[in-house]
Length: 169
Image (cartoon, rainbow, N blue to C red; front, side, top):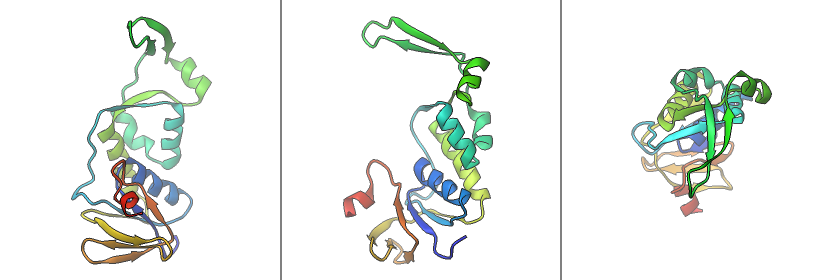
């Protein structure tokens, strides 16, 4: 792993997935989450075969898979009438055709699977209660609310729809 880690602002699904992807190619990372704990709220997610293959590649699928639901089919319905327009069976033929299963999971379960996998990987540092107050793109540094400054290989903004990095930028 490199001496200078990639600095990832945001410890949600995107930030942890980025850290796992970097670890997979031998790069170290430091994930900074402003909340005191890694938590996810929200609803369920549909994980199509591409998402499942990505999670397998990241090494997070084994931790998540037991928490997923395997629906028997997808029903595509008309938004106004509710009439069924299409039924897609999700049996073995579907998995063979697309190379991975279709699953449904809660966002919190996905986050916990990524977090469990990240904790097991060398080269990934996870830090809570680390709010970024400023940064320098040219120097690749982050200033934290604690007064600490971090230098990295690059800065990855994965701090969500209400991104503090975007506001500062």
